[in-house]
Image 1 (cartoon, rainbow, N blue to C red):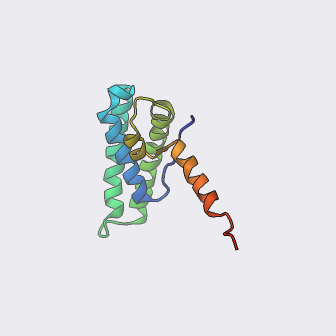
Image 2 (tube, helix red, strand yellow):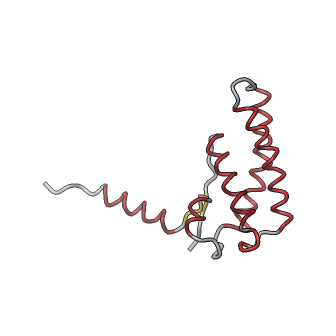
Image 3 (tube, rainbow, N blue to C red):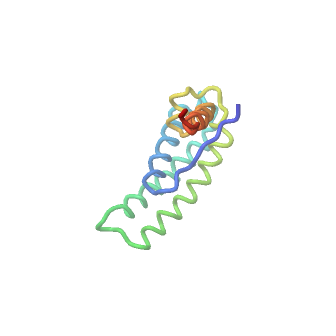
Length: 126
């Protein structure tokens, strides 16, 4: 079965997404086969992103410059996250279902949602 993932669009959802991915990926790096160099790179990019996120989301320090810096840091981190997901997380049998849910990795559960929606759209008998 092919698994997929989705990176959220909004800043707050992105923050939660990256936090889950980097923390779980770091804690489980050996079990999930994530190279140490990749974990180190993710930690560095995450630190830079979180600093800029904190400045951009603080009402007393918000500015277009802070937002641009946060977005640039996100772009760098997002590239590393896509690499992590594509090469180490998606379709990794070592990852338990609860962690896949936290990582926003979807497989058969998405199919069940589609089937449920189809069933709900059936006309009611008269």
